[in-house]
Every structure is written in C-alpha cells, then in structure tokens.
Image (cartoon, rainbow, N blue to C red; front, side, top):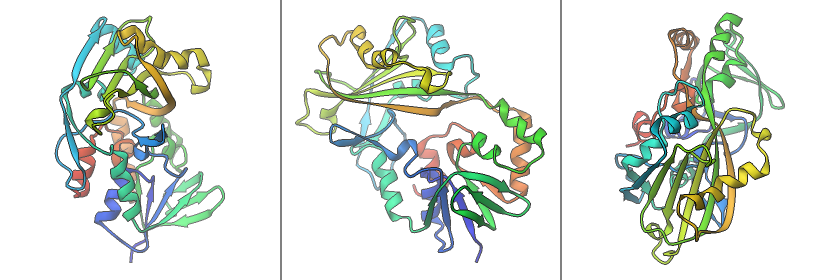
Length: 320
C-alpha cells in the first residue's frame, strides 16, 4: 500500500482524501484550521473569512442564489491600482462577486467543516524544516521525519519551495511569484440594507477598495435589521506595519459610502497573505514539471498557484 502524504489541510486536500480514502494517508499543515475556508467566530456565530460566491450546485449544501446590487465609486483605473499594488494579477475574484452566484445558507465554512469531520486521516501540525525530494521524506521541526511514496501539496508554493532541496537556480524562480495580501475587516452591524451589495472604490481618500454588505435576513428572516460587512484593502508591507487607526478605518469608511446610520456591534480582522495571485511565467512551469518528476502532485489554489473557484476544486476532486 502506498504511503501518501498531503501538505495542507485545505478544501482541495479534504475533498481529495474523501474521494480516494487510504488508511495510510497523513495530512501535514503548519497550524490547525489555517485555511481561508475554516471560518471565524464573530457575535457568537461563525462566518466566512472572506466574501465568497460560487456557480454550480453542491448536493450537501442549502444554497442561496445571489443577485448583487453593485456600485462603482471613482475611476476603474484607480480601483485597479488600489487592488493590484502594481502586481500583474491572474484575476480579481473580489470584482467577480458583482456577477452574482450562490452561497450556502450556513456559509462556505460549513462545507469545509463537514469534509474535515468526515476525513479519517492522521493529522500533524508542525513547521516544515526540510523537504528532501530525492529521499522522499519531510523533516518537521518538532515531530521529526515523515517518509512518503507520493506527496500531494496544497500549501502555498513559495513556502514549499523555500523548504525543497533543489538547485538554488530553480528555487530562485519562485522569488518571481507576485501576490497581493488582503486585510479584511469583518463586522456584524445594525443597519437596514435590502440587497446583497458590492461596492468597488477607486477613491484614494477611502481605505477599503471593496466593501460587501450581506443582509442577514437572506440567511435568517428574523435578522431583518442586521448586516454582515466585509471591508477589504490590499497591502504590500508587512501586516505589523499597519497601525490601529488605519485598520479601524477599514470599517468606519463604510459610512463615507452613504451608510451613515451603521452601528457596528462586533468586528474581527483577517489577514490573508496570499489574497490575490500574480501570473506565472514559463520558468515557473518548468520547475513545476520537475516537482512532478519527483512524485509531487500540486493541488488547489495555492498549491497550483492558479486562481480557481470552489466549484473547480470540488469538481476536480469528483465531489460534484
């Protein structure tokens, strides 16, 4: 029986394990529930860490169809500059929210949690010290060494490549990987908003570039006066460089958009390092082929470094 090791407890990993069960499988991740889809608790409930929509159908989820009211403030070119921070992006999945789609009534984290509960595999949460491709083994900081016959990676490619025992000229290729980090302010607020609303902001005097307001009445009828607000901005400096006043404006600037009566009840902040992914070049594709030659399979959005949807992830695993 082959010994398969998965790096990253992502939705891609969980879906793959569920459709290809094997008693010898091991899942290794840096920390417990580090996935963007693992959810965050706010006001005694768990919501998604980012506003997400999908197309298609998931049999296990009670889906709501969303037709957003979309608003654009300022110029499109200014908005693009605020979002990309000069990086040549593959896609702006935030802007695609304006097209509408579907979301589970219990949010996307409910699908992730369901899969996580159903997957029977050994889990190890530790820092990866070294990945030896020629010897097919992984050295972890505390746990020790884990050997494998097949390695499936869904952790961010830059992180994995910093651990691989490859020639430096190949590893340096991954220094070319561009990305934009996101700060996401999440709040439950008391204000009357009738529709799922997306606001795209090109003005420089407003900190967020994307604001999404989700009336909670579409999820539960008695929450008619309450809204879930996502306020998103792009950053390139280390997260620790951003001071409290800047972070507080992530939510407070919502009032400048015409929602003057909004009253925030509780708020959280999410830092998503690999929020938006930059394009790949031919050199990078060559290195990925080298990994494949060493029985390393790349999986998921960050593992393949491609902006793929939740529908694509589940369809690839054969869940849909």
